[in-house]
Length: 183
Image: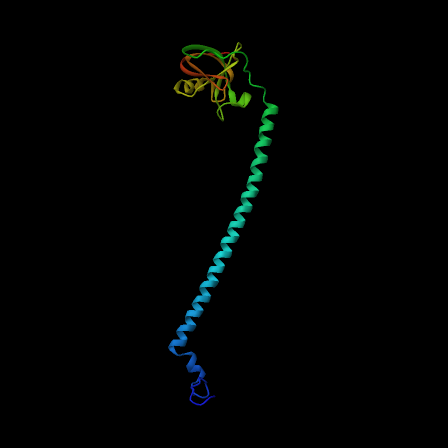
């Protein structure tokens, strides 16, 4: 030690070490340091949990996207092998508001895999164009009371209504109809 300079030494200033660490200033600094360490540990733990969650989500999404592409392809190929082709041939019916269409009531989804799922009514005709889709309305619901939702060709339907075309097919909005049981 030099002369005239004060030195902080535990022995020379006669401060007890236990009392030094318990003084309010030192205790406040230590407490602040401990709080900072605890907060940083908590932040690191939260960051690790978030990282694990993101990685798990990405791997699950990758696994799920692989599953989606295989299932519909297999289902579509199974439907096309077992289902006969849609009997659409020749010219479309002319569009009109009061058109008469006659045909056997069939389920388009069950017979050919086309139309609304799970069931819809298609009038299968023996002449061109082959089929006419019946659009849903109250009259189609009445036809379904005769034929059930999955029509199997037991009824011959003569329907009057509006005919339109879309995507190479005829669609009929039934205004009234007659049903005759054939089978």
